[in-house]
Image (cartoon, rainbow, N blue to C red):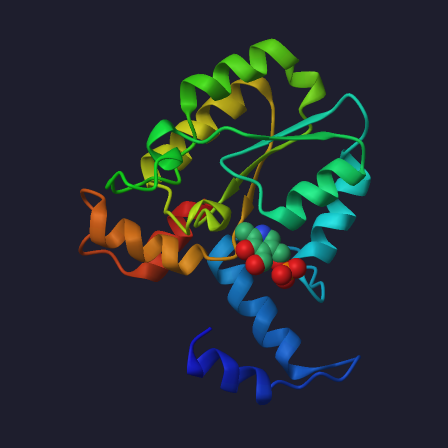
Length: 191
Ligand SMILES: Cc1ncc(COP(=O)(O)O)c(C=O)c1O
């Protein structure tokens, strides 16, 4: 984390009820994501545990570009199977490419056909792809993934640990985004 983020934590009001930090957090996350309801958890893995104890079960499948280790653990603890559907360039550390965190769209389509949409409660997208070297995902790939899922009524969940870094990579590397702010790009990712 940056020095500003660490010092922000020191300045945080951690009281259990009525903490002013919560309202700041809620306002910021709401502005970025457009979500009405914001539920904080003490760590990402705690959120994963809640999520997958509700949607995960034996016979269910959870695709992702690459599951972070705690995500995979929480999926598999529920009895579901965690499957990585990363594009080929992301599997070769020596290759140089702009968006090595992208989902393999053709493989995702085949996966849904094979397993059946009814057995896929949601699909995840990890930005940036932490277990794959922190590689970014392009806006085009987020849109294509969403389009494929929408056709089958499968919700897309963004594991947004490094959404700001991902937005910055889009600004630097994807056509049409150099003049947009990181905040605007992040909003578009979440939209
Ligand atoms: C992509 C991703 N998902 C989930 C987690 C889990 O979050 P936490 O460490 O807050 O439990 C991490 C942690 O680094 C992560 O990078």
